[in-house]
Amino acid sequence: MVEPSSVHVLPVVPTTAPAKFDAWDASIRARCYALWASLAGRSAPRTVALLTAEMPEGSAAPSAPTVRRWASEGQWGNRADGEAWETRGKTMAHLREGWLMTLVLAQSALLDSLSGALDDLPPAVVAARLKACELALRVAERASLITFPLESEGVPSDSGESLSLTQRARRQRARMYERNAGG
Image (cartoon, helix red, strand yellow):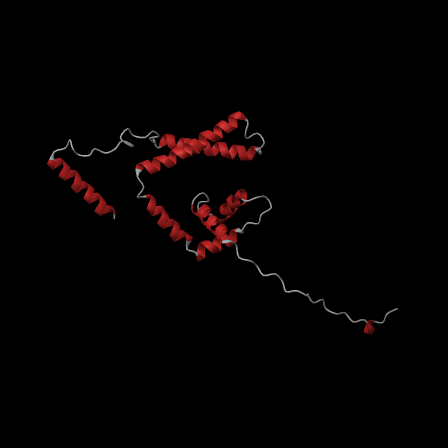
């Protein structure tokens, strides 16, 4: 039998230093901002979920608290607000184009559902996609969105040769006023 006084327990000392945390790649941070400011509606958990869905399976994604910290440190809210103000300068054609793309995406998802392309997905995912399509189509319908380009779009503007001198001067003053007011 071994006597208690003769046994010495040595503490285990690690032979290597612990690995330090490597910072996330700048492209991951940029993609998180893009998702956070748009599709995720400024929600860190939604941002992480959307990013995880985009990444290859088994890839690591930042956590929601990390995204919240980035948003706070990088003042993502102010940046997103500034970018939102920029949309006010968009023409009706740009806004209409965005809605057309949303309608095309909704139509594509509906056709996928009808053709059986969504059969392999879990029923909850299919239901969520179809609900999103329904909402996009309902918003388009209730907003009375014009989905077809106006006939005047894409047609070169009149050179002014058929206008009188007074009409051309009035048109030029209006153009200068719009340019000065906008910039």
